[in-house]
Image 1 (cartoon, rainbow, N blue to C red):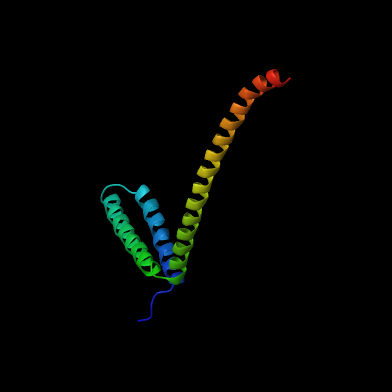
Image 2: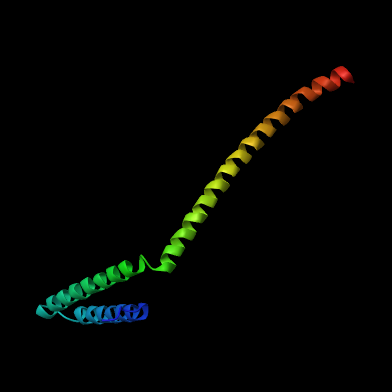
Length: 116
């Protein structure tokens, strides 16, 4: 049996979701045994949907596009780590410069008084 395509999986999910909506509508307009039967039907449909999502996940996890996307995200995270480190260094430099300028500001009046 050939593997299921992404489109076939999407179509199956669309169909299950459509059936769930139909069952909700019927349940909403039902009472008694019919409502109980529709609740059971909704549970079966939701279990089928969960199983299909799991199948999609398992088939996608090793797909080249997925692996490539994870690699790109990992690379971007490393780049952001480097940027964050540089920003910490820049922040330390600015704080140091501000301290220096504050010290110069405190010394200038004394220098101008004695040199002036």
